[in-house]
Image: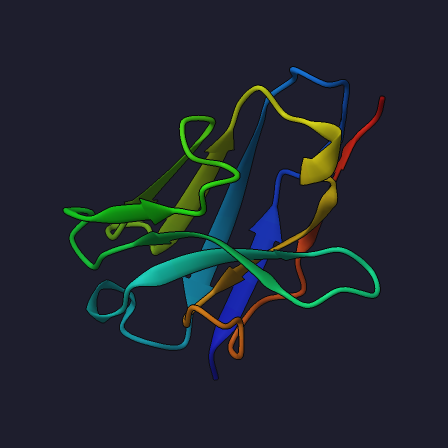
Length: 115
């Protein structure tokens, strides 16, 4: 079955950096675009970033553009999210997903930007 396992979250001060990782299994990874979405308790899932099958295309939500970088390694079935210059508004649970809306996603990793 499809498994997505995120790691790398933590507590950082404003301006700090984190690198999230996601290990995928149970499907042909290089045939899918991959996504990062995030959620604050009580709010809907928010799309953060997308990366195409060959990494030729990446997309970012306006709120993270210029600060976050998505990448993938198809040989390792992994996708990453490099997050720099973090802001308190980035505090959320971050999920690796196989679709833009997060319908197929992992359990997530918590990112807290402590001001």
